[in-house]
Amino acid sequence: MSSGRLRRLLTTVLPPLLVLVFVVAGVEWIVARGWVAERLLPRPSTVLRVFVPSSPDPLTLSDQLDLRRTLLWATWGTAKGAVLGFLLSVAVGTVVAVLLSSNRWVRRAFYPYAVFFQTVPIIAIAPLLVIWFDFGLPVVIAASFIASVFPVIANTLTGLLGTDLALREMFRLYGAGPLATIWKLRLPHALPSMLTGYRIAGGLAVIGAIVGEFVSSGGLSSLGAVIDTARTQLRTDVVFAAVLLASLLGLAIFATINALGTLLLHRWHASEQP
Amino acid sequence: MIPAPSKTAPTYGDPQPALGVSLRNASVVFGDGPTRLPAVDNVSLDIAPGAFVALLGPSGCGKSTLLRAIAGLQPLHSGELSITHRRSLRRDIAFVFQDANLLPWRSALHNVALPLELMGTPKSERLAAAEAALHRVGLSDALKRYPAQLSGGMRMRCSLARALVTRPKLLLLDEPFAALDEITRQRLDEMLRDLWREHAMTTLFVTHSTSEAVYLAERAIVFSPRPATILLDTPINLPLLRPADIRTSVDFAHIARTVFSALRPSNPGGNP
Image (cartoon, rainbow over all chains, first blue to last red; front, side):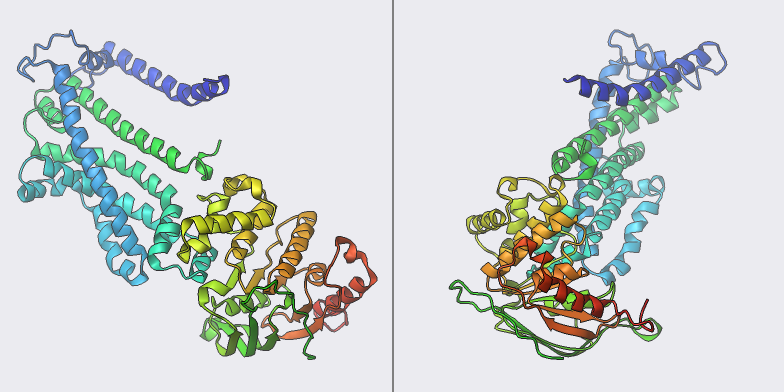
């Protein structure tokens, strides 16, 4: 690694890291002094202890199961639902956006119903999903999909419709059909905004998956279920540990999409130029 | 108006003749009702196959609209447009825009190959043609570069190569070099003039610049402010081969003055 890259890494990583250290130390101190009850806000050190393998778990949460393994297993369960929901959003959202972009009247007729996915309170229809799909993974995928599909549609559509008039005219001049125009002009042009949509959708997919898990997955098979169970036993440390894992999962999806974006855009797009 | 005599460029054995353009009482109107905006008003014009014609006029006078109408990108409100010897919509007409309009996600080579790709030319054939076209405009060493890595002049040359790759019989250029610096612009003018002499193609060039028009064309047409009507139609009687320093010759200055005074009438009652 060159000193320039090291420097860039330090300047991008150091500021948020310092904020983290200060906030965590501050919370630790406030709770340690007894200003906030530990029952309400666990000390960060207590939360982190959940991840230490040797820590004994005298509580009933997991029937003496290794809490750390339970949490990792639950993270995997949530990752499955969130990633499948996200991929469904990408597939369906892209197709819907292409159809909406094809014609102004199609757009006027159907776009309000796409917005519906943005405004529907996912927590309110989650029980309905259980009635439709029964308990288990399909509910989680459906909730994750509903929560994350709109940003894919909206951003892809913006990109598809934002092509330069002169470029569209050039395609027309050379007799390009609608399919060639979408494939060779509109979609490549839309790629940067599609990736922006994916970044937003990735985080929302995790949120949707956890809402789905609240209502549909029993036991400790997912982070949503773990949070629900730990909540009833006032295990705020486990709740926080699960929330931390959920955030890291969202971050991992985000980082994967960013890496994909760099791979696809680095040669030509301004957002990836040094 | 006196119909201007036009020199026809040699064809170098290309069997397909250049296209002629004929407009009869052509009008273009944008909008309707209170926002109705006539852009081109009753223009009649004959352009012989193989001619090089410069179209001049003040900004927004409708000369670009006229060019777009000839390309088939803008329907006529009334009047007639006919293009002689045309085989198909796709093959024979090429348009060079004000911006280079390259696809930023494609290398220079694949940008130039695009028109042939859209017409369904086999890959090896179209890449060979694109490479030859880029070679002709002096971009042989930039085949793999992306538009973001090219200078403004190089991008415009790439755009020219893309227009030429289909071997068009009618080349339409809409102020292609307006954004470039003077030296780059003159170089590209010289290149374009050579390209016109090599290929049998009718060329219509929209510009603001009197000296660019006189250097390039065999005939200059000056339009009035919007809606466009023809104010002057004059032949440019300069040699077929035009060295760079012809711009300083007396003949050049003489023709330039004629065009310039039509473009900016100096009578006190005229436009400011």
